[in-house]
Image (cartoon, rainbow, N blue to C red):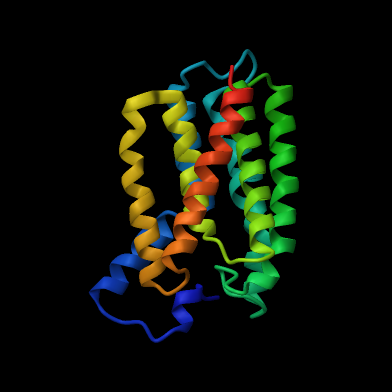
Length: 206
């Protein structure tokens, strides 16, 4: 199994750093980082029935592992790379992820865990936006996957979360350096993540 950039003849320290940034900020991993922070210090609690452990377990299963399993399986067969670099092949994988986010939303709703319920809704709508954009243009999933959850963090935690903006810039740089996206595609990913997540939180956050 390979990432998209590993199929290219890219070398040097700049590429090595870009790969580290890119791997550590993959959307599923970033989802997990945010869930860990929320589980440890939710600004509105976790509801009457869920604990930090159950919040994290649900996130790992439904928002981290399952959404990428079809990609991993197809990558293991050599059908796609782990980045799904082919724009035309992305829609079906995104559709499966959307189902996973709906199930996560329902589980958190049943557990009255509003802080994670709204986050799952934001993932659903951001992924929907990226899916629609991808029909015509290869918008950066990495950038949207970082910008969405980090916008949620800024909405919940305010100024304390503002340093995450630096991560947006790092991801845009890394994906461009690895020749997986152009600068406009990276910026578009960030804008989709920010605007859609902000709208979801404005409407749904308690």
